Length: 124
Image (cartoon, helix red, strand yellow):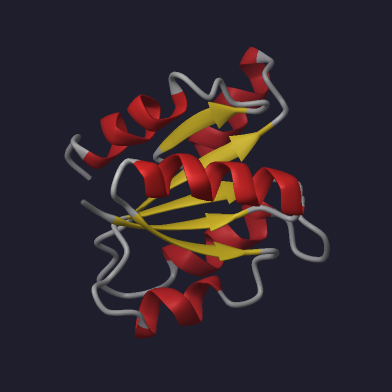
C-alpha cells in the first residue's frame, strides 16, 4: 500500500479521511495546514505517493502550497485537490493550476478509497 499525505484543516474531516485510507492499508500522514507539506515530502521515508490537498486552508491556500510543491525537484508524488467547490469551473481552475486530480467534499465514504486508489494506479 501507499503512503499518503492528507492536508485538511477540519479535524473531523482529517480523521475521517485518515481512517478510510488506513482501513485500506495505507500509511496516512495528516496535516492541519500546508506549512509542513514540503518538509514531510522531503524527509519522510518512504516518499509519499500522493498528497490530498484541501484548497481552502488557513493561511496559504492549496493553490499556494501546490506552487511550492511543483517547484521541488524530483516529484514522484501526485497532488490531488480536495475541495467542497464542485462546479465545473472550479475543476478547470484546479487542472490549470497543475493538480493531478480533483475529489469533492463531502466525500462518499463508500467510494472515496477507490477514488484515491485510481490516482495511485495511474501514471504521473
